[in-house]
Amino acid sequence: IREDALKQIDASDSLGELDALRVSLLGKRGSIQSLMKEMKNLPKEEKPSFGAAVNELKQSVSEAIEKQKEVLAKKALNEKIESEKIDITLPGLRPSHGNLNPLNLVERELEDLFVGLGYSVIEGDEVTTDFYCFERANIPQGHPARDMQDSLFIDNEKLLRTHTTAIQMQVLEESAPNPIKVVCPGKVYRRDDDDATHSHQFMQMEGLVIGENVPLSDLKGTLEFVARKMFGKDREIRFRPSYFPFTEPSVEVDVTCHMCNGKGCPTCKGTGWIEILGAGEVHPNVLRMAGYDPDKMNGFAFGVGLERIAMLKYGIDDIRHFYTNDRRFNETFDRFD
Ligand code: PHE
Image (tube, rainbow, N blue to C red; front, side):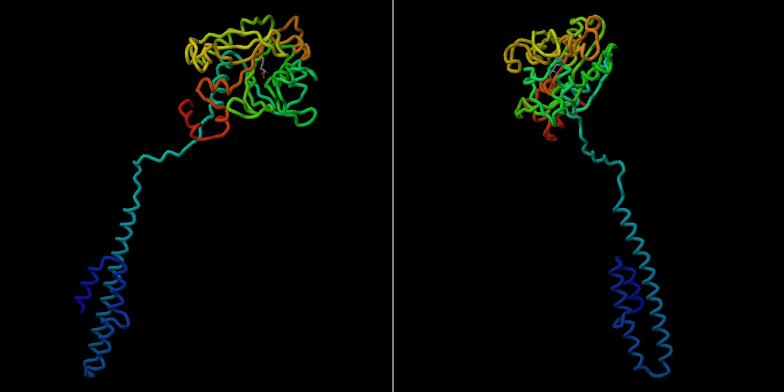
């Protein structure tokens, strides 16, 4: 029995198997226990030595089991360590990350260009007053130009700004009578039905330069520089007469189409030109109201829609893409980051 038991114990290669073996050898109905039962059939004088022998057998079997138990436990631990080994040379999983919206890309690009030209970037509040949004911009109550911008009023005085000109009117007032060179980017709001080219909320960036004898040709040179940086070095720009209440003269600015180089294509509707912004000489009334003497200081202003620039630059066909946060759309701009 002993040899057989020790052999079996040695051969067992899992803790479960070893425990089953323990039960079959040492358990109440195990083979060693049944030896004890046979003792009663032995002659009296043999009983003590038989008992001692069985006890010794029991002892050595349970010692062997304990020893094997340790061996197997160690083995199980080693296997576990082996199987859970971490390969630190495996390439990691790239966590998905967001990226800038193309509007922010365009905003930053323009800001960089203007900062490079010596402008400061000033932001203002999205909720402004009728006073700065219209009155100071030479659009008094009842002026027909108020219809150019359907407004979202909050109460009699306050409204969501319809153009970033509202920021500029505050900058003018705060800076008078000193020179100014700023760009003002931000969200603006108008009462409009959303479709592929209209949005009740969009972004503008307006520029304002005030100084002594600022010629309109400075405006043209500045916008030409920016258009070439944004749309390619061969771009030309042209001024067309226009009307804004806060500028006089006012112009609309076209750039030669970057898709066909001015030859005429669907993007520019065959004309070779694309309208990109409004601009003009700051109206003397606007200067006067803010505290400037129009005979001493003058300057120019321009206002550009960032959606329009982004749509032209990246070939986006629907303004709503900017705001629906579809990751398939947003991720397209990862590489421009
Ligand atoms: N504020 C005008 C608009 O919202 C744009 C503009 C700004 C035009 C400055 C001329 C000068 O359409």
